[in-house]
Structure formats: C-alpha cells, structure tokens
Image (cartoon, rainbow, N blue to C red; front, side, top):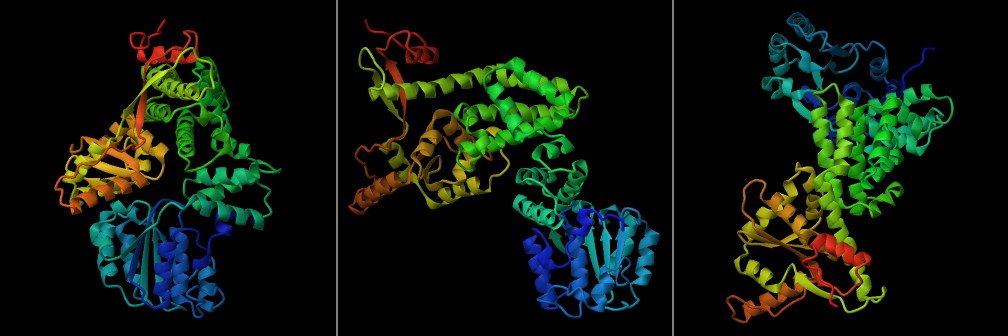
Length: 550
C-alpha cells in the first residue's frame, strides 16, 4: 500500500476532530443541529488552517442520515460516499485551474441536477480568488438564487480579491492561525498514534516553525521522520528548516552584549557556513529578543535566558530590535545579504546609542552600590550625601484631580487598550500600560496606577515616561505629563481629596505624601577615588559634579 502523508492521514473527519477555529466550528455545528443551512459560505484565512477540511466535514454533516450531536456519523451511505475517493454529492473544484467563464457556465448548467444520495449537492471551490472577472460574473446569478438542493463553499487565502458582489451573497468565516498549544497537542497525538520517537523540544520547534499552519506542522513532522531513523531531536528540526537553536542564539546575544565583535562575527559566519540563511538568522534573533523581553518582565520564564537577562537592559534590547528590524527590511532588496547581517552585528556592538545605553545601565549599578554603602556593606571613608528627587508629588496628583473628567479618562483608556502596532521601542511600555489602570485624566495630564512599585518606578523614569507620552500622543499631540503610582497610594490620596471636597473645599489642598517614586542623584561622595562607585559616578555625571572632600 502506498504511503499516505500525515496531513492526509490525520485530516479531521468530524467537527470534534478540528484543532483551533473553535468559533467557526461551533457556528457551523449549531447550523447543522438547527437545520439552518445557508446556501453559500466563504472560508478565508492562511494556508493550512483547516478551510478545506472543515468544508468537507460540513458537506458530510448536511447530508448525514444519522447525526451524532451534530457530527457526521461516517457510517451511513451518504457519509461513506463522501469519504470515498470520488464522492458524487461533494464536488471539489480547483479555482486556480478551472478559472474561466466556460468552466463556471458548465457548473451553472449542472447545479440543476439533484444529488444522488444526500439532501444537498455541495460545491467546494478552492482558491476561488483565482477566478477571472468573467467567471465571477457567470457565477453571480447562480450564487444569488441557487436551487434549494445546492450549497456553495468558497475557500480562499486572499479574500480581498473576491468581488464584493460575491461576498455579500455569502456567509463569511475568517480562519485564523492555529494556536501554538493546539499544534503541539495535535503533533503529540499524531506522534503517539504513529509511534514516532520525538522529544518535546523538537515538537515545540516544529510548532513554532509551522507559523500557525497545521498542515505545515504535519508536513514538517513527516519530513523529520524521513530525515532520521533514530529519536528526533530539536537539532534535527533546526537542520531541516535552516534555523539556529535558541541556545546558540542566546550565546550570540551574550557575545554581542559583552561587545565581543570578533567572536560574534565568527559565530555568525559559522552559522552561514552550515547553510543557514541570513534572513532566517535575523528573524530568529528578533524572535529570541522578543522572548527575552517577555522573560524580563515576568510574562514567561525560560531557563535558557537565566544568565543573559541578568546582564542586559531592556533599553538595549529595544535598540537591538530597531537595528535588526531595519536590517531585515533593507536586506530584502539586496543580494549581499551577509554584508547586511555583519554590519548589523557591528552596529549592535559599536553604535553610539548602545554606548549611551550601557552608561545608563552603569547608573543602575551605581545606585545598587550606593544602596549597599548606605546599608554598611562596604567600607567608606565618610557619609555619602544622596539627594532624592521626587518624580511624583501630591501637588501633581491634585492638579490632575482638579481638572479630571470621565470623558478624558475613557479617551486615554481607549488609546491604550486599542493600540496594537507601535514601534519596537514602545512595545514593552505598551504591554505594561495594558496591565495597569487609568484612574484619572485631565485635558493634558494622566494618572495611571499599578500594584507593583518596581513597575511604577520604571515607568516614571525619564525615558520610559517619555515613551508613555509618545504612545498617548501617537494620534494627536495632547498630553504633556503622566504620573504612575501604586494602587494603594491612589486610594489613600483620592479618599483624602474626596473628603475635603465633601467638607466644602472647592480646590482641596493635601498635605505632603511620599509616593516612593523617585530617582537618586549623587551630589557628592566621600568614597575612595579608586572605588568602583566613584568611577561609575564620575563616568556618568562628570568630574565637575562628583567631588572628593579632603
């Protein structure tokens, strides 16, 4: 018996077998149960997401004589006929090769004939967007008023190419890329059924490379089975698709972060000599940086990033992403792709902005050292003079409350929750904003709260605060200040303000309140000149500010 590809062998036979597309499956299942069958449907979406499979299941279900909770029984005469190699009541037409007026006219002449076994004759036209304008016009009248025994299902990956006159006469279902976990679950099931020896890491790598397509995932698994007769490992999948393992990519990022130009370029060239494509390397680096960001904000936790995330700043990751994304866009128009990749690596290490980011990171280290000095963990010659600069004070909050109104608050909430496509350097700040709460807004100032003091402090630092304003002013410049404070502090200050309003004060004035949101500025220190703290402070602030008292 001839070998059957996995994606064909494990094609779903009932609604219950479908992976992903839960909303569409539920809608069609209920249509079958209640016998509310339309005359024409459009299934649109990316390749390998189940359009044709679901069309065949739906075609079986509408003709099945013994439905099982809306699912086709696969045992009655109609289902057996539908599952045969040449079903009589389900006619599949390839729109790419049968796209002329004559083919559609022939179809139009045949729709008047009754089905052989079931109640409906179902026409599944795949890649329907490939039909010519004349063919669409020939189909239009039949699609508008077909015989009662005819059902049309039009499948396409490019729905925008279908005329509006056709779409308006159909029920449209937009298929989405299948969720990563659904693909992993299906691959595990197929591997178990086929006795395929494969690691969990390899399955996850297949699922990631399938990019939301179940057919692509099963085809890649099929390819991996042929590639090795032993246990399928993550490395085997990376070799097949031409990608680099996450461990190697993290190693490359560590070299870049440590400003090791020579070893970084040597590693890149070793990848290319192994047959890895430059564009694929860039995409893998971008995805790895994205995963690193999610780990750094606590959204996920992968052991492979444990060391790197302790030694790299979020600002530097943003800058790396800008360089890589710009390089990827420019590389598409060049045949010298390796040169673009090498230049990008050098930019990530030697760019002036990266040096400035490193200096800012040193400031964070300086603050940590100063805190240790304050706690007596280091020997110091004299007391360190530290001035705290408040980033939020009670006057800032009351000024917003004086002018706050519900319309401005809802406007800001809508900006944050509906904004999706932003520049890479704004993505993480936007993510943090979506997990915070807008509590008050005036015409030009906003108060936001979060239950995490570290996040509040980070968002109030100069750079991140400017990023928030950039997000809020993307559509129209309006806001010039935003304050991020703890939920608990907001409740206390708000209650005091409301109580004073109730007592008769028209513009309440509150006593001082410590929001614990500030930055530390080293005014002068008495630490030995050869100490790490002194050197970092001098590098950041300059010798004219950092003085040593004799």
